[in-house]
Amino acid sequence: MRRLLPLLILLIGALAAGVAFWTYSELTTPYYSPGGSEIFIEIPRGAGTRDIAGLLQAGGAIRHALPFVLYVKWTGLDRRLQAGEYRFAEPANPSQVAGRLLSGDVYYRTITIPEGLTALETVDLLSRNGIGDRQELERLLRRVEWIADLDPEAGSLEGYLFPETYRFPRRIGPEEVLKAMVREFRQRFSPLWAAGPQPENRRARDIVILASLVEKEARNSGERRLVSSVMWNRLRLRMPLACDPTIIYALKQNGTYDGNLRRQDLEIDSPYNSYRRLGLPPSPIANPGEDSLQAALSPTATAYLYYVSKNDGTHVFSRDLNSHLAAVARYQRGASRPKSR
Image 1 (cartoon, rainbow, N blue to C red):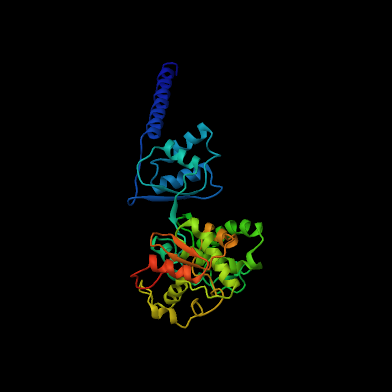
Image 2 (image 1 turned 90 degrees about the vertical axis):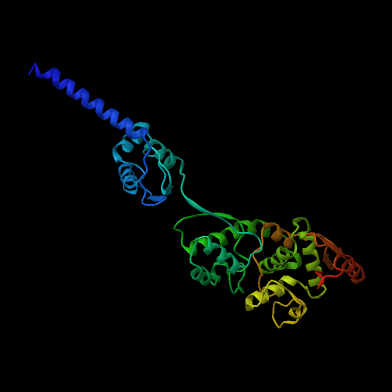
């Protein structure tokens, strides 16, 4: 036994050195074995270190579970790894993988919803970017109970899907997507509404409707409160709003809008025809952003009743018809139809 003891110690030392070398090699050598161009691994909440390592190994992010477990235990990271879905698209060693789980580098789909889209245009954009099924999203637009306190007369979520850049988990359901957009609307609109007082003692739904008109009419953010002023002044005097975007919205609802607005379109029989009907249209015509909501709530105090496009994204505002017609003659001469109100 005395003769074998040195040999045994040598063998144990060699084994330990081999394990240390293997562990070091595994920790420092990048590994990636996907079934395709990328892999997604879901780390559930409450998962232990060994469970996490098993998921990473099964998914192809690491070669062996043991080096990962040893590393996070030795560095004290085992209680700080964050849950979520992670995307791997290139080789990484276990310490790099652990670093991503430590920082919570969870995979999200990022999408920007521009201001002024209709609800149908919004769900179309979502579905084309792989976020929800188009038919299911469209069906969910009727979930008006989500906004019943704001707009008890709403027939859809039109106007309440807030335009913003969103980060959605890859597997998020369509209901959660639209609820997130409604929730964002509430978070933006509530402080504006609470600041009060509201113009003409109007209801929240009236503000959202008028804000949607402002959104479509005023490309220049600096003019939105002026456009809002014209609209409120016209409503107060019981003048038609004469707002082209309401006609376009009606044509879109009918599936007859081809990108052009013609004189005969101004005669269509529709509750959205703001040339023939007084007051606000029956619903928002788009999803307004925060600037337009603020403009609807806080219009500039003016006596303006008209505005005409200068064809550069800005308008000339007038108090009386004669001044307005002069501006139309100056800026819209030769146009097929004056862009004026």
